[in-house]
Amino acid sequence: MDAALLEQMLLGALLALSVYLPLRCGQLSLATPGFYAVGGYVAALLSTGVPAFAGSGATSPLPALLAEMALGGALAGLIALAIGRPVLRLRGIYLAIATIALVEILRVLNLNLPFTGGAMGIFGIPQPFEHAGGYVLFTLALLAVASWLCQRLEALRLGRAMAAIRDDELAAASVGIDTPRTKLIAFVASAVLAGITGALAAHFFNSWNARAGSFDASITTLAFVVFGGSRFWLGPVLGGLALTALPELLRPVGDLRLILFGAVILLGPLFFPQGLVTAERLRGLAAVLGRSRGRGHQAPQTP
Amino acid sequence: MSASPDGSTAATTPLLQVEAISCRFGGLLALDQVSLELAEGEIFGLIGPNGAGKTTLFNVISGLTTPSGGRCLWRGVPTAGLGPCGLNRLGIARTFQNLRLFESLSVRENVLVGLHHAARAPLLGALLGNGAFRRHQERLEARAMELLTLLELAALAEQRAGDLPYGDRRRLEIARALATAPRLLLLDEPAAGMNPAEKDDLRQLISRIRDHFALTVLIIEHHVPLMMRLCDRLAVLNFGERIALGSPAEVRTDPRVIEAYLGGSGGGSGGGQGSAAGEGR
Ligand SMILES: Nc1ncnc2c1ncn2[C@@H]1O[C@H](COP(=O)(O)OP(=O)(O)OP(=O)(O)O)[C@@H](O)[C@H]1O
Ligand SMILES: [Mg+2]
Image (cartoon, rainbow over all chains, first blue to last red; front, side, top):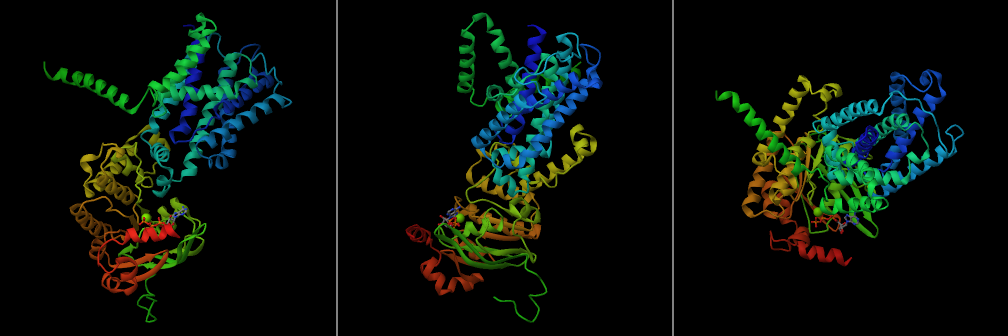
C-alpha cells in the first residue's frame, strides 16, 4: 500500500468523524463536504496568494500549514454557527436535505466567486512535506487527536447530553438539557473538523476545486459512518479507512470495481445494520482485553 | 378555594399557580379555563376519565405545549416562553405517561443525564480528566447510585434502560426526574401497568420521596383508592373542565364527580365510558 493511498484513507477517516459528531446526537447532517471544501479553499488561497503563507517556491513552512488549518476550521465553524440554529430545527431527512442544499450553495459559490479559480480551481498549492510519508505522519497525529477528543466525549456531560438527544430529544429537554445549543455545538465541531481536514487535503492534492464538496461526497462520507457504525468513534474511523481504500484496491478488476464497491455499501448495512462497531462488539472486545490484562496482573502474585 | 383575606394564605405564595389555562387542538377544547394552585410540600392528585386533558395540563405546566389561553406562575412569576429546558431549570421535573427513557443508555447513565446540571465542570480539566474532574465525577456517580438505591434500581445500574421491565422503567423515570433536583415533581400515571402490591409500594415510595426531598408532587393516576390515600388534595377534570377540587373526602362525596367520573361505584374506573364519549365528540 503506497503512502498516497494511506493518506487518502486517513483523510477519509477524519471526514467520517466529522459526519459522526452530529449523528452522535441524532442529527443527520450531510454538510461535511461543504465545510471540507471551504477549508481547502482557505488553504489554497492563502498559500498561493499571500506571501507570508506561501514560503519559498514549491514548499510551504509547517507553521503556515497549521495557521491555514486553524483559519480553514474557523471559517467553516463560523458558517456553521451562523446557519446552525435555523437549520438544526429541521429533523431527520429534512435536515439531511437542507444540508445537501448547503453543500450545493457552497459549491456554486466556489465555482463562481471571482477569486476561487472557477471550474479549474486553484493549482500549484505548495507542499509542506516533501514526501507523502510526511503527510501520513502528520494526518495520523491529527486523527489521533480527533479520536482522543471523541473518546473523551464519552466521559463528559456534553457527550451524555448528545447521546440523550439522540435517544429522545424531548425527554432530554425535559431534564434540563439545552437541546438547540447541544446540537449546535456538535454541528460546529463537525464543521471545524471538516474545515481543518480540507486545509490539509488541499496541500496534499496540490490543487483544489469545487468538486471537493459535492453531493457525491456527501453520500460517500455518510457511507463511511453507516458502514462503520455511528455509536462509537472507532466505527466511522474504520469505515472511512476501509471505504476510501476499497475503490483503489479494486482497481485491478477494472470497471467491475464500481459495482463491487456499490455491493459492499449495499451489503454492509444488510449484514451489519448497526455498522461494524457496535456496543456489544466493543463490550466483547473489552472483556477479552480485560481478561488478558487480568492475567498480566496475576502473574507477579504467584512467584 | 379563594385566598382568605385574613392573610394566612397571602403570606405564602403558592409554588405553582395555573390560571385559567385553555388548550385547543383544532376543534377539540382539551382544557377549558382550568385553574389550580399548588402549595409547597403537598401531594396533589389529578384524576379524570381518559381524554379529560390531564396529560395536556402536564404538558402545559412542563412547557411542552403552549396553551391557547391562561398562564402559569412559578412562585408568582409567569413562566410563558420558558420551554421544557427552562422550566426544568426552574425546578419542574416530570415523568411521561408513555415512558420516554434514553433506551440505548444504561440505567445509571439515564440518571447521570438527569444530573446534567450538577455535572457542570471546567472544560480543560474535564478533557484532561484531572484529579478535580475525577473527584467531581465520583460525586456524581455516588449521587446517581443514591437515587437508584432510593428507587430500588441499584442492582440494575448497568442494564440497558430499553431492556427493563415496565415497573422498573417507571421508577427509573422517577429517578431521572429526581436527579434534576426539582422542587415540583409531575408524575403521569406512575402506577400504570403495576400489580396491586407494586402499586402499594409505589404509593409509599412517593410519600417517602416527598418527605425526603421536601418536594411538591402533582400526580395523575387512574387508580382512585390509591389517590385517595396518597393525596393531600385532588382536582377532577372532565372534558377539559375542572369539575371538583378539594380534600379526598370532599372530592369523594362531590355529586358532580360521582356523576361524571366515579359513576357512583366509588372507586371503579369510569375511564372506558369517558373515553368513548370523548371520541364521539
Ligand atoms: N397534540 C395533540 N393534538 C391533538 N389532540 C390532542 C393532542 N394532545 C392531546 N389531544 C387530545 O386532547 C384530549 C385530552 O388528552 P390528554 O392526553 O390530555 O388526556 P388524559 O386526561 O391524559 O387521558 P388519559 O387518561 O387517557 O391519559 C384527548 O382527546 C386527546 O386526543
Ligand atoms: Mg394522560
